[in-house]
Length: 434
Figure: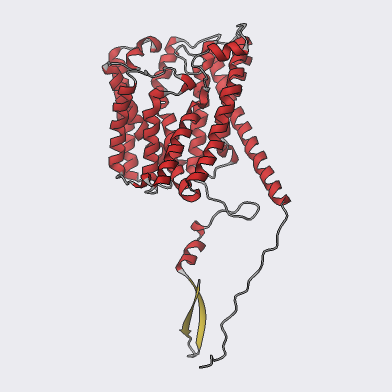
């Protein structure tokens, strides 16, 4: 609402000046304006560091899967039919250097999702958020699990010389109804829907102190992971590839994201907290290196069994390191992105989710094509990793670009309706009758 303020000028003649309301002044500030798309309509602003961080993590996951396809320990389904494996010494170095990141990269995705989901639900409402999650997560997971992934694995087996039918692959391959890399999408869908329902019923209004939450989540992930892995050891397989052994990490990090979102951590993590989390990451990594060195681990696949679950002190030690890394590492990564990854996110970065969905056909296609190359496994792993990252993000950019162009064309094609215009009448200078 526009207020009028009477001022006295130098010549003592009263003048009237229009003064905007405080809310209008606040909305007119440059940092509070919504960005305009090319159609002139406003849309919610994106958090550039988070977009860039997601893209970096997706590239890391794709490259990691490419390398794991040529390892003995495995972690990417191509290891079931691989024609070459990395030397044991190289695999041990990779496990030491890159292994810690494997413990918290997927948890960081849940952390970022909880961070963004809170404001999305508050803006759009729980019902709209659930519909959006079902379309964005549920539909791709269902199509991929029921058709795309079985066909890809059938082709991989055929390329390795196995004469199996598609039905045999679907029926006999474990776990049943495997979803491949989209297990993460499935679990995120469940967690997101529960979060929206809690906000719908008002159960999410409970406020928790941030520092206490971080410590409590570390303890909770450690204890619950140890208990669950008594029955479901790490890297075990369940129907639908549920990754039950990883649920404590995923749910705990999503909760952390929801809690810190209220304190504005999506825009800026407190520098003191970031430093402490960085120290926690270094301490956890050092503890892991000391344990593996003292135990004299030389064969990752053979010597890792006690760490995966059961009544072993090694399993508890891994749970402590994992919980510390996943909480402190996720927070530190976000703070680092807010300082370093601040350049404007391109459509390539915004296509990170599409790149993640496309990694299965791209990776397996490249690995099957490289079977005929008489190269060592190290060279193949590097070649496949480089081309897979470039190919997935290029296709992701193409999908985002075509989708936005199609939406723009559809909006321009809509019939325009004339909006009624209203003109505010100026206050009359005539005296009012008594």
